[in-house]
Image (cartoon, rainbow, N blue to C red):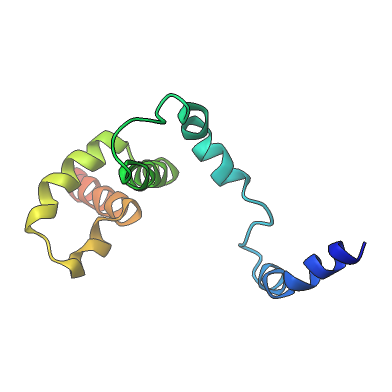
Length: 114
């Protein structure tokens, strides 16, 4: 019982953040569901690539999942962004996040429809 109470007290600051912001989820089920395919396949990919392959895969999976969350087709997004990226500066990166990219595409579609 003492261990449980000590653990709860150690988490107090995080609990306060959760209680103050109604947008913060109490669990990470969305993330767990998003990474499930990776977790299921990790034994198959255990010896694939070099030591940095896991970090690169995590970045790609994060981008793809962010695309899905914002209603963006990942292939179209990656094709567009990867062709534009070499000529961009660091300050422009915020303009090509999946959320910003989706908003820009909606604005373009609306402008072309008018």
